[in-house]
Length: 230
Image 1 (cartoon, rainbow, N blue to C red):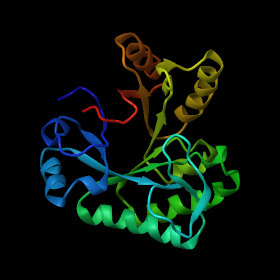
Image 2: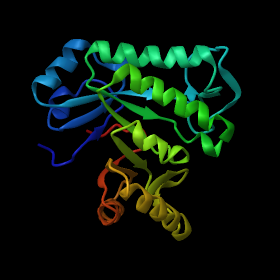
Image 3: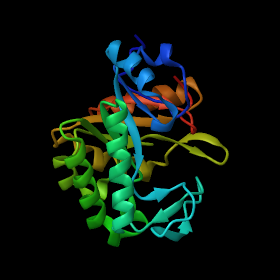
Image 4: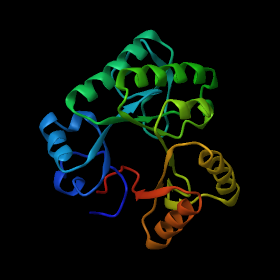
C-alpha cells in the first residue's frame, strides 16, 4: 500500500499502482468497466470525475462566452436545463460503468458567477439523487456551505497550502494561508471526510503541505499540476 488515503490521477492505465490506494479519482473516459472491476476486486473505491461549472467540450447552448484562463474550458450557465441533463447523464453513465462514486469539480462559482450558486446546489442535489447511496466527494464548493455538507460525504480542499504558479510551485502568502485556515476550521465542524490536495515539487514544500493539513484535521495528497503522479 502507498500509505496515502486517496489518489487523484487524471491519466490512464497504471492499474497496478492505483491498486495500492484505498480510494482513487479517475477520468471516466479513460477507464473501461473491466479496468474498474480490476480495481474493485482489489479493494479500491473508484470515484469518477465530473465538472459542474465548466465545459471542455464542443460549442453548446449552455456555454458562456467566458473561458477559464488556466485550462481553456468554457464557463457554463449552471442552471441551463440541458447542462443539468448533460451532467446528470454523465453521472449516471459513470455509475453504470462501475464507478463506486463521484468526484465533483469546478464548484467555486461564488468567485466567478455568484448568481449561479443556487443553481449549482440544485445540480449537486440532482446528482446526489441519481447516485445515492454512492460516495460523493466535492472539491471546495465553500460558497455552498453548510448546505453542501448535507449532499456529499467528503470535501477536498484543493491547494490548501501550496499551489502551482507560472514560475513553478510555491506556498500561498500568509494572508491566504490564514483565510484558508478559517475555512478549514469551519469544515472541521461538519461531519465530512476531509482531504487537502496540494501542489509541490520539493521535499520541503511537500512536508510543509502535509504538516499543515494534519494540523487542520485533513489527510493530505501532494501532486503536480496535471495530477499525473500515482
